[in-house]
Length: 397
Image (tube, rainbow, N blue to C red; front, side, top):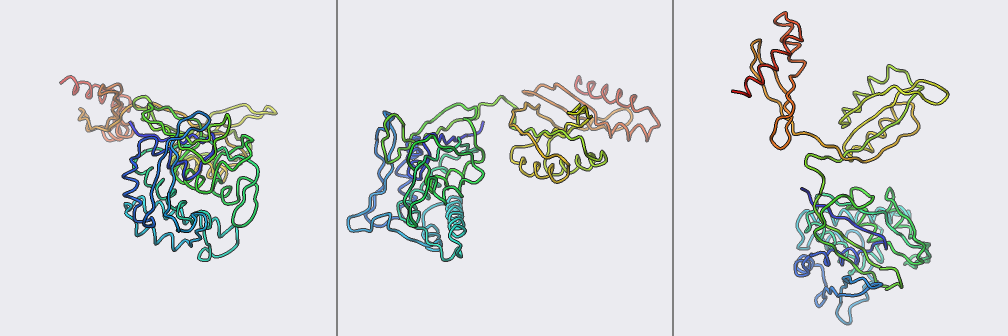
């Protein structure tokens, strides 16, 4: 089984909410302090307090800075300064590279929004020490859990306006909106910023898919508190950690489908080859009757979920369709291996399919049987029969 971590963003997400939820789910504060110690000003402390948000117990993560130190929201650092801080940190190579990549992504967004070279970008609110701790700490925490798969719900972005270093903006703020490109988001109507740039950066930068909570055996649940306690609305981010509970042999796949009734039929053979070359697991065509009583072809493609975008682009580029449906499914597969069986007419490869160690199917490779039949001047059906007999004889012996 594999470990799944699910972000439940029904009240949005921020950097401190992510880190609070990870701590609440079991990330040891001492290990977090050890990983972040070199980033902090002397005298800084990390605090994880128990608080209530609309009656829900949650962890509120905070960075406490020494008296006399500049207010955390007054920090303005360039990307190069932040990268230098991270490179000098005690993080491992993997989390360090991920943290730098996230800040680089944020700087690219800011540079594009303000139309300036990335070298001139100064990260205002996110360049403050507490935000750097939030982002780098969350990267460390997610690495600590070692999830094989990170999934997120759609993000509740809130509403109203928010004040930033550049003025008053509608929610979500411009940087937040850019960081959420391609990510499902909505507003519940609450008039406050519920997804911050740090929250958008962390969730969008780690989740490989978005949707409802996947099938899993829940092992840990953590609640990370936001700053405000809203009446009747738990201002928390929930993190759920568990093990994939899919049936043995099950695989997640994506199913792509579209109907085509106006394409040169010679293209279908070329399309099939290209789809397999691009990562499709199965491709097949079905004759269908379409609107206006026209005969058409249903194209069906089964593929790994991470191949969906590439295969979608290929279908649009190579066919005349203007629309494509997709859905994620589970499929059960038997364990398979290829073995060579010596028969009375020569060696033939067999595809063996097992479940729980039990052989359920044994099929000779047709190409091998056709080759042997041609070499021995025998009917293919006779070679197929001899091969099957030889396999089961070998099994009995």
